[in-house]
Length: 142
Figure 1 (cartoon, rainbow, N blue to C red):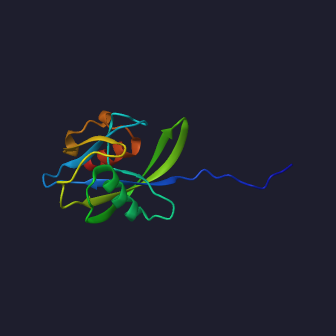
Figure 2 (figure 1 turned 90 degrees about the vertical axis):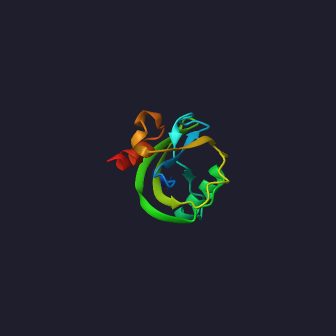
Figure 3 (figure 1 turned 180 degrees about the horizontal axis):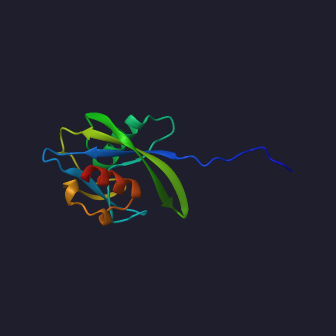
């Protein structure tokens, strides 16, 4: 039997937040779970069905860090692979520079173990878990 159904492997949409404090340090998170458990990351996650990338980045920052994003600006896209439960997802990470006015309610939640502000020039690429995040930081360092 010849099936006419074709399966295409497409990338899943994901978002990443670049958040700076007034010292020009970037807000990094530490991953609570695999993939890359214990490694540095940036806030973000998968886009829900029917959700815009802009809405997703605001939601993910709130879920992971309990802070409100006041404004966003598109930064760029970075392809990535995300292996979870022995299945590799191909993602396209849409990165946004996010403005946060009030960091006082910040707390690690959801899949974030902890957080810290670090000047990107002081981050070792080996401390970062995911390839797309490594490439974002490489670009910021250049």
